[in-house]
Length: 421
Image (tube, rainbow, N blue to C red):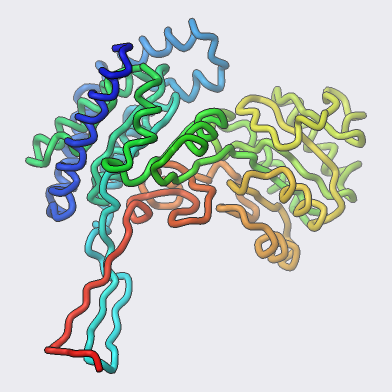
């Protein structure tokens, strides 16, 4: 389907059906949404072999395309990850329904009683790249919040996403909810993305989830509001008052557990007094673990390191690489992060409460951590069941975007014949 007019017509049809489905979902019973997600989870488990076979086709495509090992890891679905998708659906299903929840209520001297209640956004467009589990996460969270979803996955995850989407559709049918509530764009043609970005009458918000190129394109071209999920330029600062045991465990986990996720550490900042002792030992441990350490002039003298260039500061490697730099105390770390960070996730390792408080109050990243691995920067780990992305902007949603963040609100005002003087 290469004809632009065909793509425009395809997307217009998807948008119109999503709009109609959203109107029904806005007042769908909580029990029906829960039943749909539970049925979808059962379908994922029943069709696990089918999903695995589809994923293998995508893995072959990715290998032929020359994807890095980290990117292939993001794409890969093994039995444990498929089981995790089903569990994620059940976790979202079990959460309290956010729609209609009273955020605040009060009485006025005029006799008015006012309630601010959660309401769906409407239609959410999600544009994502290689991780096929986003199909389930995004579809589930949108449904839980009463929104219709239009999902456009990356070309690498095309077959996996379709297999997972089939299970979501099965769940919707089982719960007698409109199947158009979760639609997957059925083409790899990039024109579909361009079309989504200008569907102002049909899509209420776009959530891009991917690399710098994708997010930059969406931010530049979208006429629809955007929840931006920017790069994860994630810093870990090791303070002079850090506990050495915690530092080793957290730094290695933050970098090496999974290098291809947005919460993976990309820059290690070391307080100057630690340069010869703990700092050097941390660099040695990273090198021994197979990490390529791009070090500043002080640390570059250590065995196994590479000399960093200016391009290494503020770089999202998504691989077994990390930049490393000596800084002068917590203020030096704050200055570096302000200059090179992406306001995604940054961590401090310290036993000094004052240093931690200064780090927390003077930085404005969406997620700030103390003595914890940045790999916890994930909606599931925050108790949200899943996430549609981590928003780094400051309007509406920030940090992990779960079901509650996919709602807006309205005011319900009641009186007893009240009139205004």
